[in-house]
Length: 95
Image (cartoon, rainbow, N blue to C red; front, side):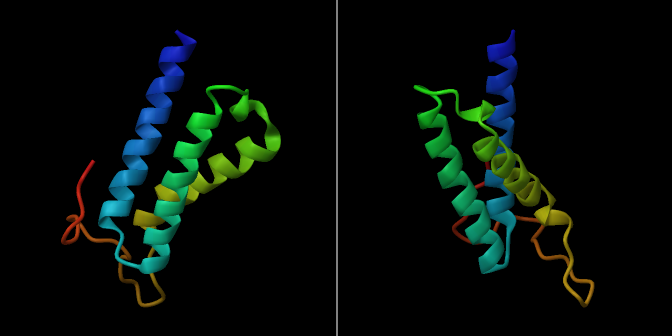
């Protein structure tokens, strides 16, 4: 049961981050999402041989960065414009 919930949580985190990456307009936002996805893949590979997600110095930045990625679509710039597109940009693939 625990492994199934963990797998579901990791798959949803990946899907949400890919969706935000596909819709992000700003280079900084796309870079944050791409960096998160690369780090996430590395953590999952590392988790095959170590207890990665129970180490506080790894777990806290991971969840904090995931929270930033998840909230990117809700951000607005100083002029009140949304910083993300409703549809994926050219060349982007949806999750």
